[in-house]
Image (cartoon, rainbow, N blue to C red):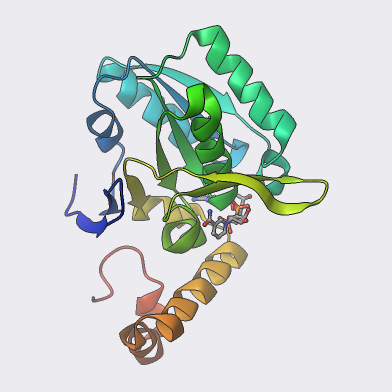
Length: 215
Ligand SMILES: NC(=O)c1ccc[n+]([C@@H]2O[C@H](COP(=O)([O-])OP(=O)(O)OC[C@H]3O[C@@H](n4cnc5c(N)ncnc54)[C@H](O)[C@@H]3O)[C@@H](O)[C@H]2O)c1
């Protein structure tokens, strides 16, 4: 594993956001005592989910790979219910856990599935979109959409850690990369103008995820 940046998040149940490359080893370490870990993912991230499953198995944890529909089609009650059915069939207990591998839609769903199963089990978002890394996977807000609207049903359920593996951004479609950069710029306006300086000074380096483009 290369160098990892650790960003602590406070609150009643503090956790760290880890930012780096090749971050698939931490999930077993973040989930001590788990016998089974459900790995929720949409079709575009199947390869990464398979790799994570293999790493979990190598660490002595039984992975349960659950493929869900992509994007907003996955943030639905019937999808969450199908996930709970699979956790039930596999005998998931309070010490088992859920990992969401994907953009904000999959991590919102995974967090919601974890928040409701046995009234709350541990979970880890593996954010693979820039928007997920900057916003959706951080903060513990989980949820699904209903006929009444988007994100109207959900729960505050902080994860035990957030993984932002920059290598996953290599395959992110340009439109989703741009949407994530908009969120980065928004953070600059709201919280830290240094972000705006970095983006303005060298936009190409600001979006470079190889680590070769400076700070
Ligand atoms: N919980 C929160 O606090 C919070 C905050 C902001 C947004 N959100 C939610 O996040 C969602 C939007 O997240 P998003 O912009 O990541 O969209 P998304 O999750 O729909 O992902 C966009 C597309 O990119 C694909 N993708 C993601 N990572 C990829 C990768 N590395 N390589 C290839 N394809 C990849 C996805 O499969 C999808 O097709 C919305 O549902 C929104 O409500 C939640």
